[in-house]
Length: 326
Image (tube, rainbow, N blue to C red; front, side, top):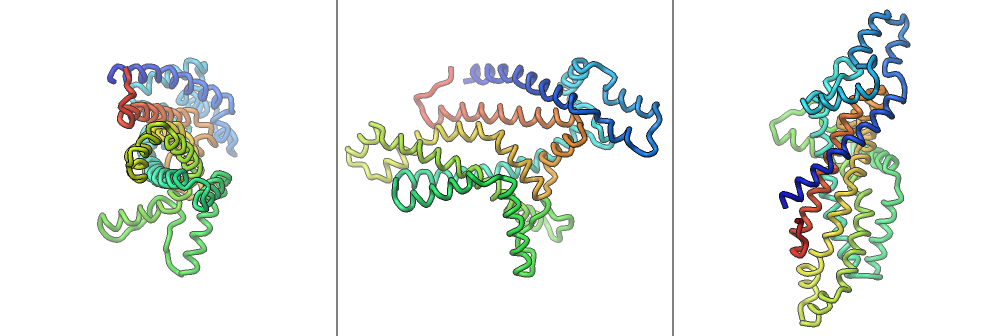
């Protein structure tokens, strides 16, 4: 198991290098990051522009700039930002916790709903319940993430106006001022998570529930499940103790592979609900052509995707003892 893990981590290194280098070239070709500075009225002096170009390594060839950045990352330096008051490493660290909190709760909610709905749909195949869950799943699958988030936000605003009080929060990941102790801050943070979590979770739930249903149907029709039923075991015991465990194996793969999609969805969700997470950081960095900031975001996402895929592979051995990683 240790050898397999180390081998996977070593394979991940060239993947990260190739992906970050490709993004670096694309951001570099997107335009001049100092265009805003040069377009000021009155324009800055050539000396000021030269100092900024040297600070951002714009006076170096692209390949040398990338090498300077990648060697600095190894030492904990994510490079200079176009915004002089921004420390990229500090910003990434501060915002990562905000985005991770949203994604973790959304994944947990989506997984629980998808597994429960998928199992019930498979057991009640072609029943009214199955058709109802199928309709709901395809409904959420067809909704654009941005539109669904805006719809939830507008619904929250309408609910607050109707009741005349702050029932749900529609802006930010926390209130500026919270009176009370730790419990008050925890309740405030939880209240701000309701709508963004629902928005992100339900869009993933639609696809995952259909996948879980298909996986469960395959297992229910397998020989060992039919044999267990023939031995006289109750249907509930067969489903819960025999079929479900095997049917969860493909779900771990889907969840791990969809992690990048969840991060992309988090970018949209954070933008709509004005969360100061990695999503807002990426949007701001792209708009300002901040190459090193975009690279730092990509590096964090790439590492997270690789780690989650590795965790999914290792979980196979726990879900199915027949699977061994040599």
